[in-house]
Length: 86
Image 1 (tube, rainbow, N blue to C red):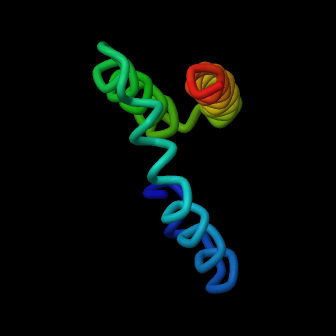
Image 2: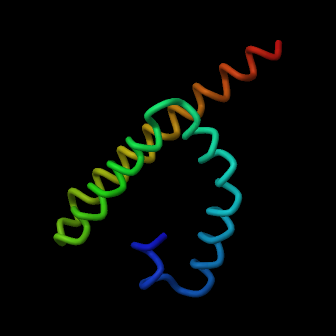
């Protein structure tokens, strides 16, 4: 959000803020396994530093990879929990 806020239009900012709020429970679930908080902090720092250097291409690639890996890990986590209940 910190990277987007300065450039967001009011409507876009409202949508992003709502998505951020809705996603928080899933973020907490994703961070449950050991080591995930440290890994997330490391990835976010790398992404920020890349962005701050002005390397937009690398920042985009890092962001996409981070989002896709997080999505895949969370999907696996939720699937495993669903299977535990069956």
